[in-house]
Length: 149
Image (tube, rainbow, N blue to C red):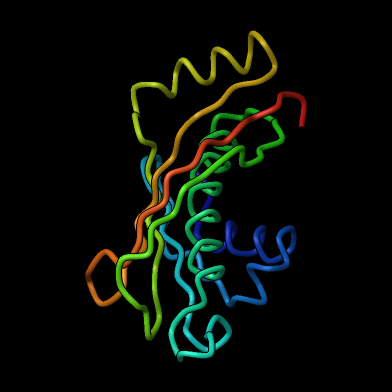
Protein backbone atom coordinates (compact mmCIF):
# COMPACT_ATOMS: atom_id res chain seq x y z
CA UNK A 1 0.00 0.00 0.00
CA UNK A 2 1.19 3.49 -0.80
CA UNK A 3 2.45 5.50 2.19
CA UNK A 4 0.80 8.82 3.07
CA UNK A 5 4.04 10.64 2.15
CA UNK A 6 4.21 8.93 -1.25
CA UNK A 7 0.55 9.65 -1.95
CA UNK A 8 0.95 13.31 -0.98
CA UNK A 9 4.00 13.67 -3.21
CA UNK A 10 2.14 12.03 -6.10
CA UNK A 11 -0.84 14.36 -5.65
CA UNK A 12 1.29 17.50 -5.48
CA UNK A 13 3.25 16.48 -8.60
CA UNK A 14 0.34 15.26 -10.73
CA UNK A 15 -2.67 17.25 -9.48
CA UNK A 16 -1.36 20.80 -8.91
CA UNK A 17 -4.61 21.94 -7.27
CA UNK A 18 -3.81 19.65 -4.33
CA UNK A 19 -0.58 21.56 -3.70
CA UNK A 20 -2.31 24.94 -4.01
CA UNK A 21 -4.88 23.74 -1.45
CA UNK A 22 -2.06 22.50 0.87
CA UNK A 23 -3.58 19.01 0.89
CA UNK A 24 -1.90 16.59 3.28
CA UNK A 25 -2.26 12.80 3.08
CA UNK A 26 -3.01 11.75 6.66
CA UNK A 27 -3.59 8.01 6.26
CA UNK A 28 -3.88 5.37 3.55
CA UNK A 29 -5.03 1.79 3.94
CA UNK A 30 -6.99 -0.79 1.96
CA UNK A 31 -10.36 0.54 3.15
CA UNK A 32 -9.94 4.30 3.58
CA UNK A 33 -7.90 7.33 2.63
CA UNK A 34 -7.87 10.44 4.80
CA UNK A 35 -6.72 13.78 3.43
CA UNK A 36 -6.67 17.11 5.23
CA UNK A 37 -6.47 20.75 4.20
CA UNK A 38 -6.13 24.00 6.15
CA UNK A 39 -8.60 26.87 5.98
CA UNK A 40 -6.33 29.64 4.71
CA UNK A 41 -5.68 28.58 1.08
CA UNK A 42 -9.30 27.35 0.84
CA UNK A 43 -11.10 30.31 2.41
CA UNK A 44 -14.07 32.14 0.88
CA UNK A 45 -15.53 35.62 1.39
CA UNK A 46 -17.44 34.40 4.51
CA UNK A 47 -14.24 33.15 6.20
CA UNK A 48 -15.34 29.52 5.79
CA UNK A 49 -14.07 26.84 3.44
CA UNK A 50 -14.97 27.52 -0.18
CA UNK A 51 -17.44 24.89 -1.43
CA UNK A 52 -15.22 24.08 -4.39
CA UNK A 53 -12.33 23.31 -2.05
CA UNK A 54 -14.52 21.10 0.13
CA UNK A 55 -15.74 19.24 -2.93
CA UNK A 56 -12.21 18.97 -4.35
CA UNK A 57 -10.86 17.45 -1.12
CA UNK A 58 -13.67 14.87 -1.09
CA UNK A 59 -13.07 14.00 -4.76
CA UNK A 60 -9.33 13.73 -4.15
CA UNK A 61 -9.80 11.41 -1.16
CA UNK A 62 -12.17 9.19 -3.14
CA UNK A 63 -9.92 9.15 -6.20
CA UNK A 64 -6.90 8.39 -4.00
CA UNK A 65 -8.61 5.37 -2.47
CA UNK A 66 -9.25 3.72 -5.84
CA UNK A 67 -5.84 4.79 -7.16
CA UNK A 68 -3.96 3.40 -4.15
CA UNK A 69 -5.93 0.12 -4.20
CA UNK A 70 -5.23 -0.38 -7.91
CA UNK A 71 -1.58 0.58 -7.50
CA UNK A 72 -1.11 -1.78 -4.53
CA UNK A 73 -2.43 -4.64 -6.67
CA UNK A 74 -0.14 -3.78 -9.59
CA UNK A 75 -3.03 -2.74 -11.83
CA UNK A 76 -2.14 0.00 -14.31
CA UNK A 77 -5.07 2.17 -15.36
CA UNK A 78 -6.26 5.70 -15.97
CA UNK A 79 -8.76 6.70 -13.33
CA UNK A 80 -11.32 9.45 -13.89
CA UNK A 81 -14.42 10.68 -12.12
CA UNK A 82 -17.65 10.05 -14.01
CA UNK A 83 -20.24 11.74 -11.78
CA UNK A 84 -20.74 12.88 -8.22
CA UNK A 85 -23.04 14.49 -5.70
CA UNK A 86 -21.98 16.61 -2.75
CA UNK A 87 -23.92 17.88 0.24
CA UNK A 88 -22.69 20.68 2.49
CA UNK A 89 -24.18 20.26 5.94
CA UNK A 90 -22.20 22.61 8.21
CA UNK A 91 -19.85 25.54 7.67
CA UNK A 92 -16.16 24.72 8.01
CA UNK A 93 -14.03 27.39 9.67
CA UNK A 94 -10.71 25.60 10.11
CA UNK A 95 -8.64 22.59 9.06
CA UNK A 96 -10.85 19.86 7.66
CA UNK A 97 -10.49 16.27 6.49
CA UNK A 98 -12.07 14.01 3.92
CA UNK A 99 -12.32 10.29 4.66
CA UNK A 100 -13.16 8.03 1.73
CA UNK A 101 -14.44 4.46 1.51
CA UNK A 102 -15.90 2.22 -1.16
CA UNK A 103 -19.68 2.32 -1.02
CA UNK A 104 -19.70 -1.47 -1.25
CA UNK A 105 -16.42 -3.29 -0.49
CA UNK A 106 -17.82 -6.53 -1.89
CA UNK A 107 -17.90 -5.03 -5.41
CA UNK A 108 -14.10 -4.57 -5.59
CA UNK A 109 -13.39 -8.07 -7.04
CA UNK A 110 -16.12 -7.56 -9.66
CA UNK A 111 -14.67 -4.12 -10.51
CA UNK A 112 -11.20 -5.63 -11.03
CA UNK A 113 -12.59 -8.52 -13.11
CA UNK A 114 -14.52 -6.12 -15.34
CA UNK A 115 -11.43 -3.93 -15.78
CA UNK A 116 -9.38 -6.98 -16.77
CA UNK A 117 -12.06 -8.40 -19.08
CA UNK A 118 -13.42 -5.24 -20.74
CA UNK A 119 -10.62 -2.73 -20.15
CA UNK A 120 -13.10 -0.44 -18.38
CA UNK A 121 -14.88 -0.61 -15.02
CA UNK A 122 -16.86 1.66 -12.68
CA UNK A 123 -16.99 1.80 -8.92
CA UNK A 124 -18.78 4.02 -6.40
CA UNK A 125 -16.90 5.75 -3.61
CA UNK A 126 -18.17 7.82 -0.68
CA UNK A 127 -16.37 10.40 1.42
CA UNK A 128 -17.27 12.39 4.50
CA UNK A 129 -15.94 15.85 5.19
CA UNK A 130 -15.04 16.08 8.87
CA UNK A 131 -14.62 19.30 10.83
CA UNK A 132 -14.12 19.34 14.61
CA UNK A 133 -15.10 15.67 14.85
CA UNK A 134 -18.42 16.09 13.05
CA UNK A 135 -19.56 15.33 9.52
CA UNK A 136 -19.77 18.66 7.70
CA UNK A 137 -20.51 17.29 4.24
CA UNK A 138 -20.96 14.11 2.25
CA UNK A 139 -19.77 13.04 -1.19
CA UNK A 140 -20.68 10.12 -3.40
CA UNK A 141 -19.08 9.58 -6.76
CA UNK A 142 -18.57 7.07 -9.49
CA UNK A 143 -15.09 6.55 -10.87
CA UNK A 144 -14.15 4.87 -14.11
CA UNK A 145 -10.90 2.97 -14.54
CA UNK A 146 -9.60 2.52 -18.06
CA UNK A 147 -7.05 -0.27 -18.53
CA UNK A 148 -3.62 0.18 -19.95
CA UNK A 149 -2.58 3.35 -18.09
